[in-house]
Image (tube, rainbow, N blue to C red; front, side, top):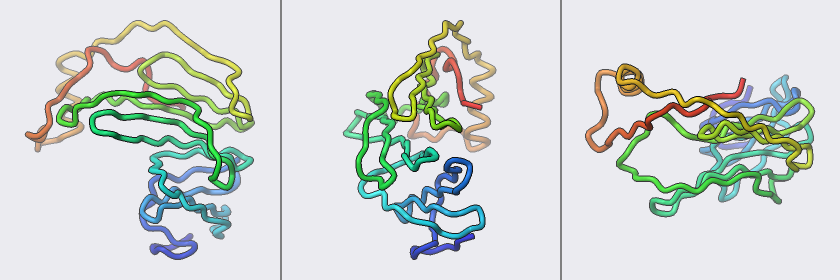
Length: 193
């Protein structure tokens, strides 16, 4: 369905494809700066402009509310934010925010990020993989439960570092303009299933 282009029902650079409430297909098209909603049959239902928002991931619920993560940068300061937009993509509320300082010449091959998902009943679950902690929100985006677990940090061995470098950079190796900065331990978790 759809075709390459900038007009209605067309897309240029699809960054994400997700299901909305198990019914509609939502495409995040960064190059055209919009969400496109399609039926399972491929009919373009609506398109919403992203405006000035630079969104990297998106999860709509069955009612059309849109959870998205946005990264803003100011010099070496980075703010990662999960935001909940209304179905018209106008109003929003901040669900979570993390501020960090980065050195753009250093590269951490063990990524740190937010992970989140929308459940079938529109509850929203999120966590940051630097902590073994998850927050569950109800349909109105209010916290209803927090899960915190102790964990035993798993050290990254020299052999594992070499394997990660080989998988990530292949034969070309690490570019000269980067310095690798491995953490001492893996993050407590990687993905939601």
